[in-house]
Image (cartoon, rainbow, N blue to C red; front, side, top):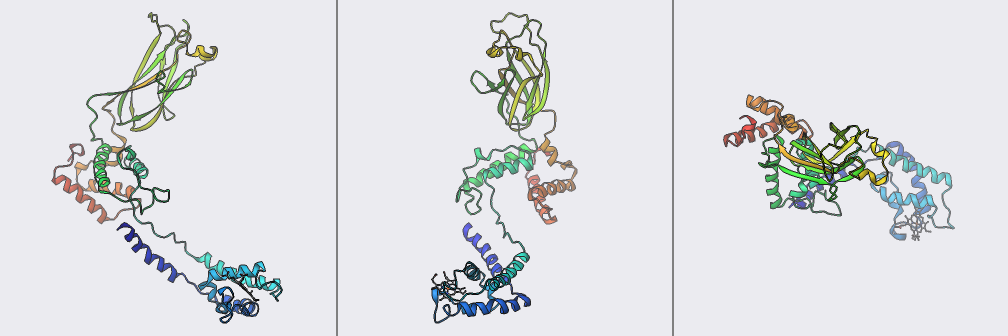
Length: 398
Ligand code: HEC
């Protein structure tokens, strides 16, 4: 069905190209053809390549009109190449002089160049196709600010010729359609923050002891963590060890994807409490955006480890360093979700004018072009239907 449809749309386009694009030579080129091309072909080639004597199946007599420069361009290119290379006429026979060959080539090549220059580039038409998983995830992220992992939820895309973005192979199975519908609901809820947070907080710990954290040196650690909900989190940093009694406090920074989000002072001298293994923890709360991020905790401008020898940097009797990052949450954030603000640009409860504004703005971004009134009207119908069925959540204020 799909394949047939594609052929039905491509065929007329292809035919159109063939008929519409056969050009004719200019009167000037026709005259030059008559002067510098046809006589040479007549004299040097037709003796062996004519209707009676069809050497290699080639009839040079069929190429004596200027129009053939375009109607038979491919054959002409071959002829020109035989003449230019001196391959034809065969050795030992009288051949055109070099200036004659040059003049002949100039007429043909000049005419082809003129045509090529004026061809309007026609890249063809892109047939509508579904997005593959990577494209779907990226589009949802860019359009709605929701980090949806299509690779986890959707079946693997089929591939053709090693590519997974060929329209013909990207079919939509009933299973995928179902997944689309479920995903759409979840993504929409996420986008406007109507998606409830888990009732019980979750804990994710990254630690040097199980190698879930990367050590970037004596005073920094890094981990990759997936934030599933844009919300507030309690972040706890593990700091084993202690320095000398008069060691200065250091500034500890916390970065996400290279951006510094938080700093705080951390004591490094012995706490006075008696520990077998000196250890302390620091914690702070931050609102983190959804998605996979690289988090780093480390001391800023800390030159203490430079004074230490080799492995003393990780001796808890000689130094204070970092060994753990823990995320606890999510907790409801007091700030409004960025994506919600971007979508609900006015208060939908204020009436239809606002609903139309929200829909046309979103559709403009989704379709990547201005939308027509009819298109917006058909989207408004969905909102009306949802209202009628009381499906619109209270978060929309309707
Ligand atoms: C003496 C006879 C003779 C003359 C004159 C001659 N040809 Fe040929 N041509 C042949 C023969 C024989 C072949 C086939 C053998 C070969 O490919 O070498 C051939 C092959 C060709 C082919 C290859 C066809 C193909 O499908 O591969 C082209 C093109 C061609 N000639 C063009 C020309 C042109 C252009 C001229 C004039 C400039 C010319 N020939 C003059 C004898 C001739």
